[in-house]
Amino acid sequence: MFEDLTNKLETALKKVRGQGKLTETNISDTLREIRRVLLDADVNYKVAKKFIDDVTVKAVGTEVLNSITPGQLITKVIYDELTILMGATRNELRLNTSGPTIILMVGLQGSGKTTFSAKLAKFLKTKSRRVLLVAADIYRPAAIEQLKTLGTQIDVSVFSAGDKDAVKITRDAVSYARDHGFDTIIIDTAGRLHVDEDMMNEVAAIKQTVTPTETLFVVDSMTGQDAVNSAKAFHEKVDFDGIVLTKLDGDTRGGCALSIRAVVDEPIKFVSAGEKLDSIEVFYPDRMASRILGKGDIVSLVEKAQEQIDEKEAEILEEKLRENKFDFDDFLRQIKLIKKMGSLKSLLGMIPGIGNQIKDADIDDKQLVKVESIIQSMTREERSSPKILNGNRRKRIARGSGNSIQDVNRLLKQFQEMQKMIKLLNTKGKKNPFMGMKNFKLN
Image (tube, rainbow, N blue to C red; front, side, top):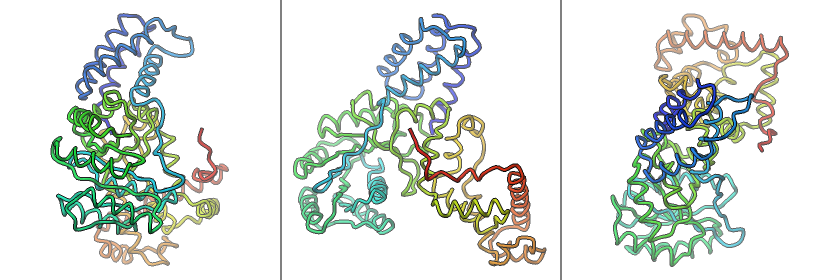
């Protein structure tokens, strides 16, 4: 996520980190380079100029304390200004306590509206909401079928009709939702490849008819300044309440995320990376600023773990670890938990200090699939007692999982090394680091 921007900012900040004190000259040189980095990232030039001006005002004349270095100070100032630039604080989705909550999704074709509608539906299901998805893209039958398929995958009802009138479809959908006890309605509207007057008029008519609780503008973060321009056009016509940034796992330079909030003066509410239907995050400006500066995001990582870890299972796992009875069945459960949390590289990137170290590393999530297939090709007895895995058994597992004997041997060796480490930790009285996750309190 924003790797190129992060690396270039890191390079720019190195110039001031070696200085004994902050001066107007070294601040000016550093910020001139950062301004160039922001423009290269496709940040709106007016936004970039104001950002640099604001950082300059706060940095110049600020006394450097004995406990911090000039590099730390300028990094802190830039972090604060990035946080302000992206909205300062989290803006939550408004949900009605009485009567249905109606969420209208708008944006250009290809921005990821349909997929994100399903992601949001799944997210809200975890909040005990009864969600109805509405297929209101009357121009693309494929979009309607896609929404139905996604709805089936997450067990969410989808309302669609044969009408060629999107306004009527949404009106009927709201009536249906009221009659059948749905408390949340997510409307997936039509898009175009570019801003189109007919599309704008249709979306505006839908909004006037159903009076949504929230109107969210979904934008492909890889489109840079084009995304900002389309956001301005939509906001003038539809007056949306919040922004969703999709495809943050792509080759995005960061310009959209850093510009769009300042240009349209509406909050970013969600971000999305990847096609998995659980790849949705509430947007926190301070956490994103930390990621952009390569400082990780340990709070989000803990929250992801909290969502997946069951307290009773964690207690059972701790007991097994303490008694050195951790087997391949336990290992398989931990792999599945990690997969639910997101891609390995994105998870590692949330750990402070790790992001830069792994930027060029080839971290392939398919390796987890390979490990899963090997373990699943073992018998129950082999999983619980890996010591019985002789040559013939290993060959059978390799054939059954579609891997080489070397892959099987490598996994067994790694597992043995992990067991040794667990035994060593137990002798030193260490506790399972996963324990207490459910009761961990975030500020």
